[in-house]
Image 1 (cartoon, one colour):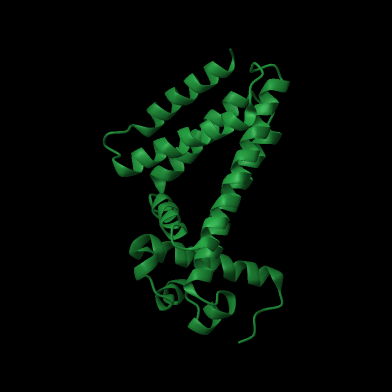
Image 2: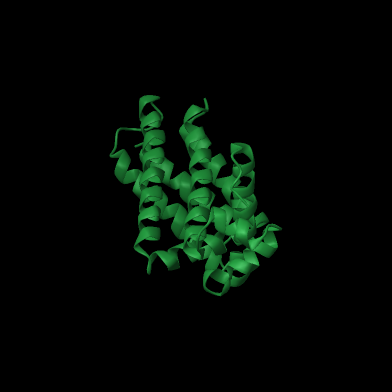
Length: 200
């Protein structure tokens, strides 16, 4: 079956395959999951699956790109909102924690990516690109806060790195032991303390 020339159909099928892969990988892990399982979950033939993704590694890379690109789109959208930067980032953190509670497979997949990155340089490079873009978006937001007079001047790139460490670190602790970490409460308090320090 030839790959459809219609870009809307191609995009729909890619999303269909990636959603199926996400479900299969979240349940079975990257190592145990098979392309046959993804084909079955997507409702497409194995031949169609291989037209879009030539191997499981190719599929993992495609899922990584889509997952993190979606997150970056949401983060970059904050740059256009006319609210204090602190409010925007607190709202964003609340939305992300709510989403993680609703769909625990999100973090299962994210930490699978980190495990694969330790073994596969191409996945590590994709993660490096994502975190560079992540830092860049947060840096711009913090610069907006300085320009708007919300924060005292500081090294925005360094603060963005600290903010990522705070967000990622607390998320990892919650993922590891959710009973010990009340994520919304702890994260909100930590972010408010972070922003208080930026105000001088």
